[in-house]
Length: 119
Image (cartoon, rainbow, N blue to C red; front, top):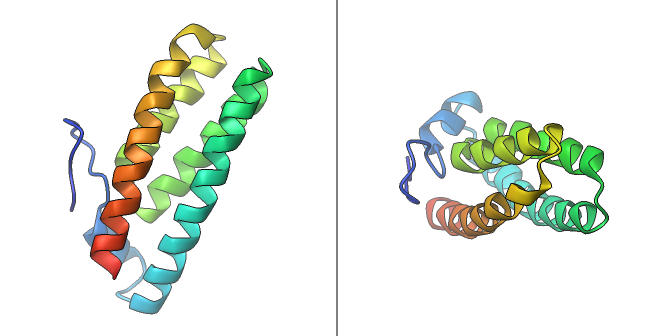
């Protein structure tokens, strides 16, 4: 389990993913690398939605991030996306930028952690 960013949530909870996928290393690698590719797209789409003041789309994308990050064991990314989802639901655009910075930072740490663990 990799933890960083001063959080109680692990960046990458490999043991949980390992158990969830019954130790299937091929599937773990495949899903993890697909996840990293799709997350970058989702983050870019969140920026686009925010720049368009589209809170519904921001909320929807953040919700997708919460679920996909959680299912792959990236709990810190999931937690940050949940904060973005909540602020979008509350029409609180003013504070979303703080979470976007956190999300970007966590994405980079997550990507690094996944590569270190799976390569």
